[in-house]
Image (cartoon, rainbow, N blue to C red; front, side, top):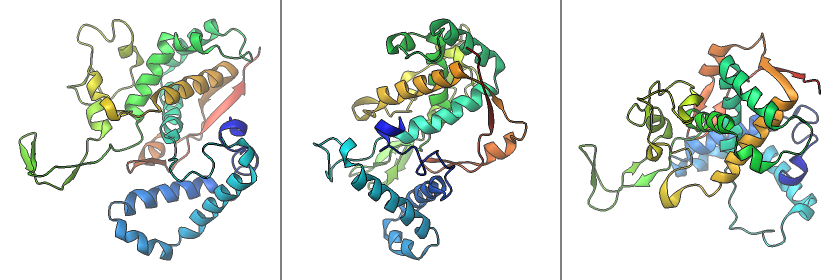
Length: 289
C-alpha cells in the first residue's frame, strides 16, 4: 500500500523508523489549524506567527520532496495538475481506528467476525478474493456500524439562499452557513433504533435487532447523500473491509493493559475532521498458520 498509493512512503516518512520527526502529529496540527482558522479565512494571515507553522512547513516540505523524487509513480495525465484535489482517505483511516476499538470492546462481535473470516479465507497469507470479501454479511455489518458511529467530519456546509429559509420552524436569514452533523442524524432514534448510540452490528443483518429495528438510509450521512455524495464511497468501504480482514486473519488483537478508555474517549476531538489525542494501544500476536 505504501509503495503504490503513498509514494513509496515505507521508511522514515511513515512506519520504518517510528516517525521520529513527528510528521503524523504535524499533520494533525495542520488539520486543526485548517478547521479552526477556516471558519474565518482572514485569520490565515496570522498563521505564520503561530508556533505550529514550523512543524507544518516540515510536513509540507516532505510532501514536496516525495512528489519530485517519486514522480515515476504519478499518472502522467495528473502530474502537476492544479485541479486535482486530495482524496477522502481521512474517512477510512479514522473509521479503521473505531472498527478496532469497537470490536475489541465487544468480544461477541469480535468472535463472530473472526469465525466468518476464518471460514471464508482459510489461508490468511493468500490473496483476498474481493468478490468473496464483499459477500461476507457480518463483515459488512461491522463496517457499516463503524462508519455510522465513527464518521470523522462535522458535515458539509451550505449557504441559505436569498430570502432566507425556515428550518424546523426556525427562520434562518439568507447568507447564513448551515450544516447537518452526521453524528446527530446517525445517532438519532428517528433514524436508527433501538440503541442508536451503541455498537450493534447485528442491526444491519437480516432481522436486525428485532421487530422494532429501524435504519433510515437517508439519515446515514457518512458519505453525504444524493447527487453530491462522496465519489470515493466504494473505495473507502473496500479499503476498510480489506484492511480489517487482513489484520484479523493474521493477528490476535486485544486492547493493551496500559490502554486508558476514559483518556481515549476524552481525546477524540471532532473539528469537522477527527483528531485522536490519545493513542489506541493494542497488543498484536501473530496467529499460527
